[in-house]
Length: 258
Image (cartoon, rainbow, N blue to C red; front, top):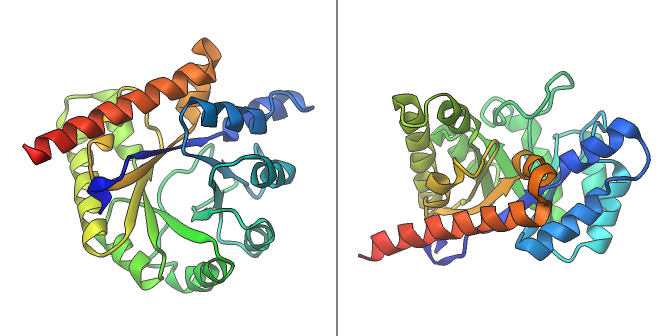
């Protein structure tokens, strides 16, 4: 049961590579960042190999698979090139995400309903290769139902709208509405047999309410942690995030048992 599991933390190290690529060379090394994140309490590492290689590079993926002793969540577009790379390296998991060259970051969830025919053979081939497939989706029941039909065992709920609303008005109706959507989607995912993850835009200020949703098994957080690392170190940032997650989950489980 999802309610019995410790909430896992996946740390996305893409933007360590962004800084490296701004200057060229090998520093800072995203694989070193992955090691530090694991030492600080990360349960897994996430890396997105984009079509334009704007941050993570092919060699980073090879090294992460080879050198990191935690599950690698390989974020990828549903393209033939990325499918070939995933099946070559065989990470623990592959999270299918939408991707546009002009976007600064992933702007929303996959349209799994309209993209069903395109996604189906990709999900099937990844699964056949022994890779656990996750779909990055909006907190919408129709998307979750489509994920089940695609035989994907995991969904990751896009938390960006909630985080943007919280930034503008933390106690506002829009923030509450977006959080309610995540709560409802996570409950629906559990009812239909999907493991539910969540991520995008989460910060120290926004993580608590999401971590308190007991049917969510994992949070994936990256940009904020790398940004915080500039000021206080990656170890400190990951440990604080881990503590906030654990505190929120423990309180939620305590309320449920009471």
